[in-house]
Length: 159
Image 1 (cartoon, rainbow, N blue to C red):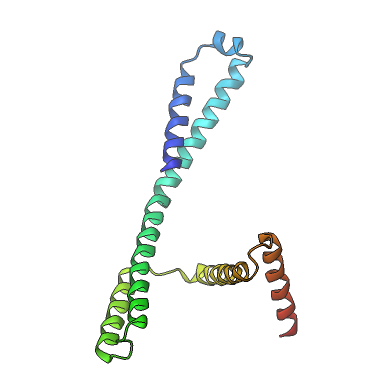
Image 2 (cartoon, helix red, strand yellow):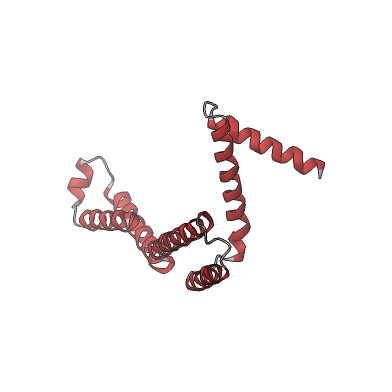
């Protein structure tokens, strides 16, 4: 949304600049020929970025991810409620929850295989950092991140 608004604003400004005469460009300190070439190149760049944005649909992808996060949050709350309740060993309730899980995941867009490992790594690092912050609330975040990084390298070297 923000990118679309910025592109629209820049396109309007560039279109307005097309009608500026040579005397005004000279008064502003620009050579008219160079200014017109720069306006033309900038217009082409804005047009290409607009086409890419339209084709990639970042806004639609972001909305899809937001919707998936909301749906999974509801599912997680159901699981937590089931686990905390007295019915956690009830086979019928567990089967219903399993059905909800399968139905929910079937409705969501799959995570592309190419990004899955990167996302999993990011999630696990975030979870580990959260645990470290809980144990060391006064420590600087960058030091906790560095310690996690260093311990990861040491563990990899031992394996």
